[in-house]
Amino acid sequence: FDAGTTRFNDGKCDPLGRLWLGTLYEPRNRPDAALYACEADGAGGLTVVTQASGAVISNGLDWSPDGRTVYWADTPSHAVRAWDWDAGTNHLSRPRVFVVFAPKPADWAPGCGLPYGGRPDGAAMDAEGHYWVAMMDGGCLHRIAPDGRIVLTLRTPMATPTMPCFGGDDLRTLYLTSLARDGGSDPAAGGVFHTRVPVPGLPVRTFRES
Image (tube, rainbow, N blue to C red; front, side):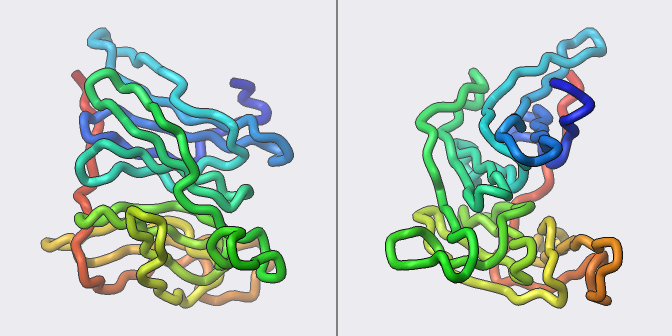
C-alpha cells in the first residue's frame, strides 16, 4: 500500500498466533483500507496475506471464542462485518454484515439498523461470544450478542471511548482507552478507565514467532 495515504490502525493476534493488522486510509474519503494477516515464515521474516478490504478506518477486530468467526469494523460506515474463518487454511468465507448503526440520531427508523450510539471503534470478545465495542463520540460501550442484539450498554465518563480489553486474574476487569482531541474540553478524554463486568473476557493472544 501507499505509505503516504495509509497507516496501520488496529490489530490483534488470532488464536493460532498470526498477527492481523488493519489500515486507515487518509484523507478518509475512499474505502481503500484493508485487513492483513502476518505470519512468521521461519526465516526471520513475515508472510503477509490480504484478508479483507473495502474499509476506510479499520477497527473492532476480534474472534469468537470457538475461533470460527472474525469480526471487523469500519468506523465511518457505522458497520461491523463478520466472516467464517478456517484457522488451518487461514481462509475467510461467507462475508456478512454483523451490525450496522444509523449514521446519526435523526436517521434512525425501524428496519434501518441499530439506533445511533456513536461510531464503532475498538472491540473485544467475552467468553460467552458477545462482542464489546467502544462507540466513538457516543460515550458508551455496547455488549452485542452473536445474533446482533445489544444486550448491555455501559455509559462512559467521556464521549470518545476507543478500545476495550479484559484483564485481571478472572478476566472480569474491563479496561477502556479513550481519545483526547486537540482543543477538547472533555477532562476525561485521553484517560484509561476500568470497571468490573459480569462475564469474563478472552485472554489476550500473543504472536507465534515460529
